[in-house]
Length: 58
Image 1: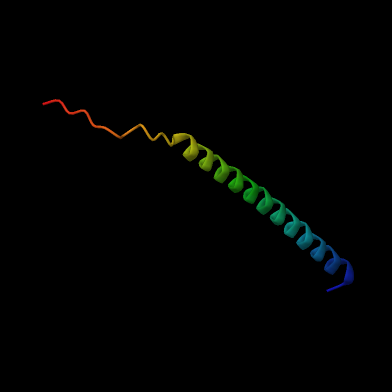
Image 2: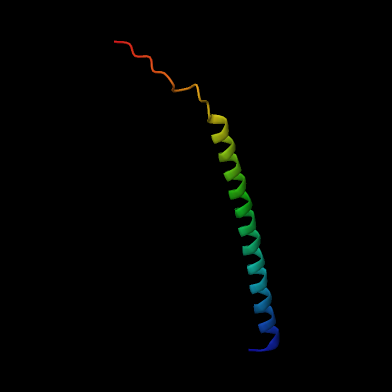
């Protein structure tokens, strides 16, 4: 294999690696955002007065 072909192959591999890392960073950021959103929803859903009594009609 000549040096030019080797250089091109390594360059393409570097580009693929950088693209994969970039996509992974975005995925991690999105997962963190989703996690924060879930925590916010859980915090807002806490209502201690709901479910403390039960009305039954017969």
